Length: 158
Image (cartoon, rainbow, N blue to C red; front, side, top):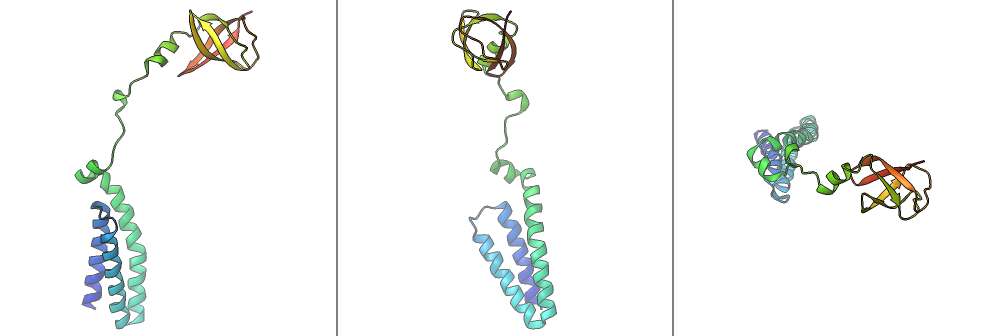
């Protein structure tokens, strides 16, 4: 009985260690061997004890793995293993998007037909634009009504 409990505890500790120390499956194989040995010793005592050990393993291993992965990012090892994205103040907006914001409410002229996308001359610059749903022919006056990133939406000026 003592060997069954010791092997069960050793297997559970190896599962937790596998989460925190990547061993490419070596610790998992050792944990599985410990669980198998624990079950063999438990079933030698009685089938009821063996099935209770089996149930304990089936329940505790996923709980330990999920709990370990929830705790891992908060540990010093986890902070080195898991990359985090940039902070909100570190994200830079591309200058092309800032320049596009200056085009809002500007007027220009289409160079190609907009069906619904095409090219227009706005403020002396060739810009890819998108009409607001209608087809606009070439050499027609347009006005920028919406800028979302690199997407510039225009409408025909009457």
